[in-house]
Length: 108
Image 1 (spheres, rainbow, N blue to C red):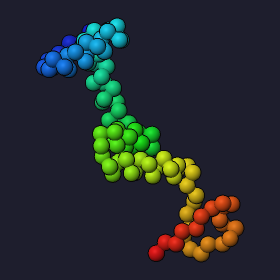
Image 2 (cartoon, rainbow, N blue to C red):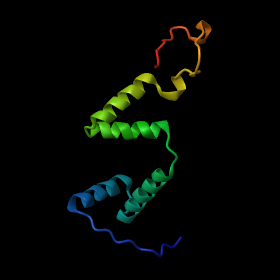
Image 3 (cartoon, one colour):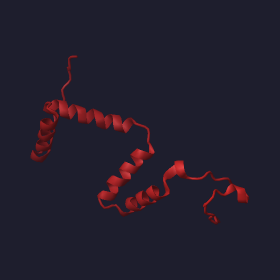
Image 4 (tube, rainbow, N blue to C red):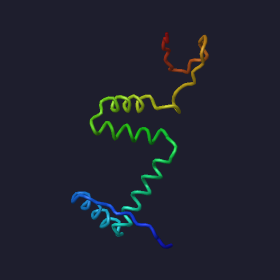
């Protein structure tokens, strides 16, 4: 397949060293590494949000020092998310609705 379009990119010395390191690891070319990275970013942006992607973003922000993200990440990992959350039914609570070992919380 012929590639007729060209994009020129200006990189700092550090960015070029990073690209060259990836070229060495992947045994490819500079253009191939940049093309793969750009396409991967575009595909990632087009994907539907998922719990795993959200947790990954929270983890990234927490590693960068975001305290709110760290708290949210800890809470989500502790609670286990939607799959482990019990179904909530508004109205009166009957004893048989409470799972064994379940907790009751008063909601105002």
